[in-house]
Every structure is written in structure tokens, then in C-alpha cells.
Image 1 (cartoon, helix red, strand yellow):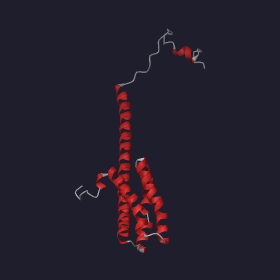
Image 2: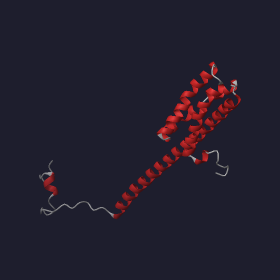
Image 3: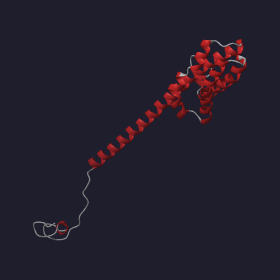
Length: 177
């Protein structure tokens, strides 16, 4: 590309008004521009950091709520199974209670991300076998307490594992906790 003087653009840049060679210095950057740029970078970094912390905190609280709900559901199962072991009889409403698992269905995805692998496997085992346990109980044949006792043991172990992760879930925890 040619300038009006007939010289190429690159040649024209290298000469001053007198035609003498000059050195090109980088554009000077003002202190205000540097301060503004640093402010933008810091602001973006702080905002991003706060967003990450808040997201992790929300995820932690969601997982804690899911553990509490599952603990409550398993505690109800344990109480129902303890009744069967002590009385030696099934109640139809008890089997309906054991068949339902709304908290597991609603919260298992949160727990899968939150629980240690061994605890997850125990929870999954209890809930996976819950349906077959209820089906076998409805068929009869085996004395109810003989059938309920091993399953109750697994439910209690699952409760203990949840309590080990969250001391507020323990049956010894007080209202003040």
C-alpha cells in the first residue's frame, strides 16, 4: 500500500516529518488504564471465586439435607422392623411403609456425589434389597422376625454410617445441636 508521498506504508512509518529515520516506541499506557485493567481482572476473579464458594456451600447444604432425610426414612424403617422382630408379625401397613422410599428416590443423586464409596454401597444395598425384602415378606413362609432381623441389621449399619458422617444425625444428639 502506498502513502500519498509514494512511499510504502512501512517506509512512511519509519520516517519523521523531516524524512529522517526514527524509532517507534510502544504506545504509552497511562496509569489510569493499568489501574482500570487491574480492577476489572480483580473484580472478575473475586466474583468468580465467590460464585464457586457459594455453589460449593449450596451443594454441601443440599447433601446434608439429603443425608438428614434419608436418615429419617431409614429410622422409620428400623422402627418398623424392630416391631416385626419383637412381635413376630407383619402388619399390612408396615409393608406399605417399607415399600415406599420417597426420600431415596428424590435424593439418591445428591448422595451419590456426597457419600464415601463404602457408605454409598451400603445405602444402595439397603434400598435395592428393600423391594425384594417386602416381596418375600408378603409371600410368607419364613417367620417374620427371622426375615426382618438380618435386614434390620443392615438398616442399622446404614444409619450408623450416616451418623458417622454427620454427628447431628446421631440419636444422642440433643435438640440444642
